[in-house]
Image 1 (cartoon, rainbow, N blue to C red):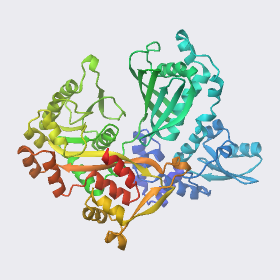
Image 2 (cartoon, rainbow, N blue to C red):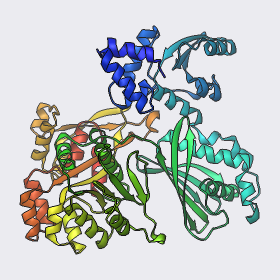
Image 3 (cartoon, rainbow, N blue to C red):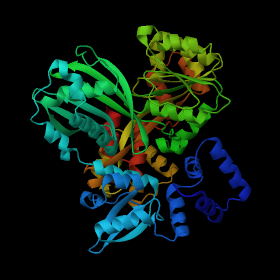
Image 4 (spheres, helix red, strand yellow):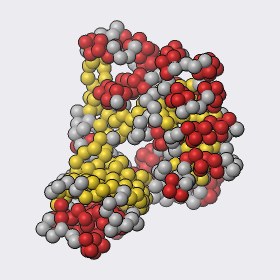
Length: 575
């Protein structure tokens, strides 16, 4: 972290912040128990890279950003991992006589001199950002196949039933499980799958929504690994025939992570799936989620309403919960009482009263929602509307002065209203309580480091025209300030982008994910149509007349902007 003296100097000189305002900011940071640097970055007062670039000028050292650099393992290993992690320092390049060091504290002369004595190379020191150092340090754990613990255990005999606890406490087993978890964090995985087969155990990660094989382990250590995960999750080690759910937390490089564990019996043993959740992660705002300006305004308008329902729909894994948490983050203020009922609680949000359903104890979405109404809530979030009873209570809550947020499993926005009516909810109740419906999917983002243009020729445009109105698409390009070339205006060709594949995206051409959305605003005309018994097709036709941006159109705008690819959009919207 930078010293307060340097930060205040940068804020005054570069950003023109006056002493009084600065004192107020420092006081607010202290109230929130944050240091000044963390506070100004969290509040988007200053961008992290800009802050460190200016700080480097104050310190009279060069600044370096490590993102996108190919950090070779043999160069990184010139500084041992414990030293690198303790002193926040990495080697990013070398020559015959020099080594180039990226640090958070270029004034740490003692460490620099120690490295010089050990390597006999002249150090050239650069300042970098904490997030860059954090990312670089993860690369020490980048290759699971090099794990010595696996080699040690390859010839180990299979574990007998009574020795499960002992096997779970073997150092090689502990190391393998730790490395699987650390590697998953480095890879940006959302889920870890440990799958027993007849003669081996397969480890797979879900990265950006796609499952990929990571490694194969010998069958003999299967029971030890399963027992280790059960101990971490406080589950029964000797229970093999019944599904079990648990949770545990670990800390990797100062970052708190929570793993939600599901274990089920399968033919060759027990399969484990762990969902990786970043503790204390700040909710994303609507821009970061990927809302275009038009739909974003509709959502912002809907959440200012004191009552009614905001519904987010889509299949499992489409990012519905993340969107709800982001809306909750916007609504979360000291003067508001927010209650959530979830299955399960994915993120702990400060200032929000979160409950998890427990069907065995009779605590369901419906019973929990009933109890919430006696808790004087302003805003209620229901993880999912699964049945008629939950739908009824949610709608009555929305009618009696509460803002209700929830999710529903439907393919698009127009089919959501008939789906509620199919649950035997009277149409007039649905019409008068629903404020807005957001349908969504997740698409992979094009890798920024290997992104290249490609031309969609006239034949391909004609194919595209069969599923989307090209004239409407052109209007959307112009509304979103996308510059068009002459041949594009005439529909002769379109320029889009795709990733060629590089080391940084594991040759996939994609890195990260973003949402594509359709936002249906419930206006007076639509209320009348629902009351008159309009079906999904009628609602869809009306929405198109009102120029609602569909998920396909939203995705193609993002593809034109170079954020994703046409292939990804078509894959996500045709599922």
